[in-house]
Image 1 (tube, rainbow, N blue to C red):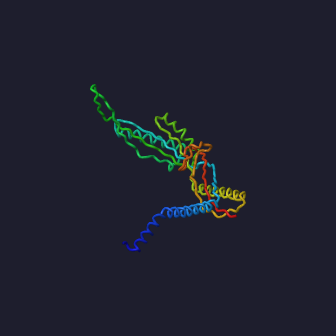
Image 2: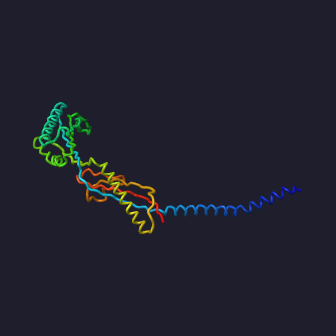
Length: 259
């Protein structure tokens, strides 16, 4: 005959096992209620705020221009090619000086040397490469605040073709040297715009605008005036092809509200 206390312990264990499903269900209900309660509380806390986005736009004219021109010479010998290129550089420098370009604004790049080969194929289809000569190229760059003067020069410099200089005139690039100050000014304007929007929403809702909880600055976009939306970029755009530019920036603000 088994001891009485073992029999009672076994009966208690059996009872506990039978009640485990009910205990688990009860525990799940408690956990669910706790989670939902916190979610509702957080949601209500989240809704006690006004989120707005302000924008600032400004058009301006570039105050710095960069123009580049490229030219090259080919000859069977390196010395011959270099002498011809050097003569072109002097011709170009004299021309730019005659147009009023300042010496300190002119930058001539290092000469690039390329060996040129020709390929011949015999009657059996075998190809052989032979050294043919040298192709030397150089670039001149003008960086100046005399935007209109350099802009006109970029169109007139092809006159040098009549003097035997085959110059490839690049499209000018336009920049703005006061960009940092402009950006700070526009951030302030966008913030002011967003704050006014939030105040108006609060007034219409019958509550008072509280403190600023957080703010996020959008990307700084610089495009040509009246450009298409395709020129805008998620990472920010910086147009250099247009002398006239249009800048924009957004500020997203979140304010607390008070009854």
